[in-house]
Amino acid sequence: MVLKITNVTVRDVRFPTSVEQHGSDAMHTDPDYSVAYVVLDTDRGEKGYGLTFTLGKGTEIVVCAVEALAPLLIEKSLEEIVGDFRGFYRLLTSDSQLRWIGPEKGVIHLATAAVLNAVWDLWARIEGKPLWKLLVDMEPMQIISCIDFRYITDALTEEEALEILVKAQESKQQREDQMLKEGYPAYNTSCAWLGYSDQLLKKLCTEALNSGWTKFKMKVGANLEDDKRRCGIVRQAIGPQNTLMIDANQRWDVAEAISWVSSLAEFKPLWIEEPTSPDDILGHAAISKALAPLGIGVATGEQCQNRVMFKQFLQASALQFVQIDSCRLGSVNENLAVLLMAHKFRVPVCPHAGGVGLCELVQHIILFDYISVSASLDNRMCEYTDHLHQHFTSPVVICDAHYMPPVDPGYSCEMLESSVQMHQFQKRGGCE
Image 1 (cartoon, rainbow, N blue to C red):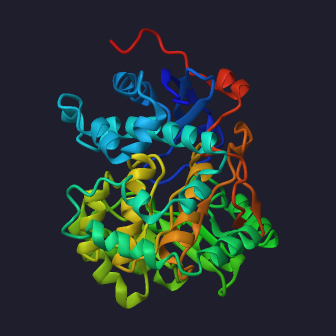
Image 2 (image 1 turned 45 degrees about the vertical axis):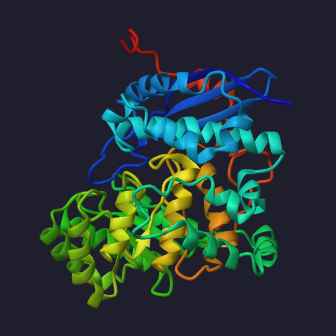
């Protein structure tokens, strides 16, 4: 039976996380974690849920962009979409007028992610599987058919991607069984937001350590002397044997980044995340080269606009850790392309998460990466923050610092209607 999309609704939902400085960093000092929340209605009553993440102001602009894309979905059948998912992805990203306000970047791409996340959620629900399992069970050629290879064939061809997926079929069931039993390794960012006091920093790190966490990330970049003191507190709390990462959230120029991070090298960070502009590929390459002798890698990607930029980051050896994001790129379709490129270039994928729903979403993608693409956990982990999960119908499950694979059908995007209504932002006027 054909299932047709009959309506697209989108709402602006905001949470006041800035009140207690949750999510604060050197560039985003007062974030209010928010989403543009999309619901797809169908003629059979089934629904698909999707979202894209923001920090408060501006969510209303993403809502307008979703509403601009909505006519491209209305009256489309799910079978028509997933039967030519590459074509549908290109339809959304290449509309001859809408693409001018991208293309494939910025607000319009965030809206694309929200819409496509809802489509993937609907598809997984109809199949009765969590999204990761839907992906894992696909034949390699079906995965390939979901990816738009335009602009990246100089780095990864369809034939190369297919070869990667076919090779990973070996022992795939063993890795799936392993994930169901052990889960995917996570690291903790909740302990060390920039706005937290030294006392809270120490307390949260100690509590997390006692709860089984061994990998921690902290925010840096506002003041060097403060960073030295705070890094010292965290390193002392977690001990020399555990893993520390630092994140500047795009704070520095290139030379400043090299100097600043060199001053923090004594605390043995595994990586510096987003040291400079997220668009500066050659700047990241220069930082990577300068910090390599110190044993510090560069991680970036949460604000990397699209697969083309990831391609160039990889080609330029400008990052040592790929940080995909479920809502910055064009949903699962584009993330699949980045996973495959990262594997070809032998760069580990360590996703960005946190926010509202990002943990819920990205766990599906990283499980697929391990089971069906990379077949490796070397230097791999997925970010986790302990915020706002209670607003979802299928919240993440963390056990012994590991993401346990979701079991409910869908992409874990559905929010509690009571939460949506309580936190829906009321804006005067409309999009026009």
